[in-house]
Length: 305
Image (cartoon, rainbow, N blue to C red; front, side, top):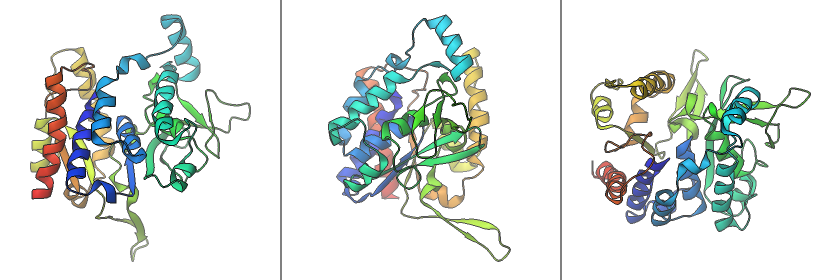
């Protein structure tokens, strides 16, 4: 969401260091999929900053008959909000650069844009999916980003067929994949450009691609803890919202963090969220500048070391 402003700061540092233009592939998950898409399409750091800063993400909470409709949608389509406003917004951003909101992964690849990879969690297959021109060439890019943002029970789940066409509900044959937020089991997909080999014991091992650069946005206490022990930092709980946040972090981070290696940490830029949590929906001009500068300065520091 709004913390994506920090990614724009990262991109500006990459632009100023002559690195951004050499990047060929970009990946992201959930909210990070938005910034990845903008970068893949060729939006500048300034444009990214403006787009995210000027967007009211609460406008994406769509759907008729809030309570009755929300309950019905949650029961039948596994999400309170439709997510159609979000999809239309993403489509307009794509159209601005490609001429059509219906651009597919294959078209993005063939027309010379940076290749985009986003993650999704496939609940019926119980596995992480990488959505790209390699796996779903005919899938519309706007649908892929919508899937990656499909927070369970918040936005309606998305059903996907074998070629990447999306549906709002299961078909009669019950053969569609049900996909939701990629952040559930892939909230930091630094591995997606790595390769895999079998060792002498025929065990699959991951070979890091050292040209990959990962970006994490975390609190200052978590960044400090990462530098010391790689463990989760303590999370103060003062109200119910804090309780839910602490529970969410504990579950999601333990699903993802245990797979990170020292090679992964060494190719990761940790960006301070400067005290801005995901539950904050609107920022002052000063807060936006602070968040942007945090991304830029963290990137510059990484390349100095």
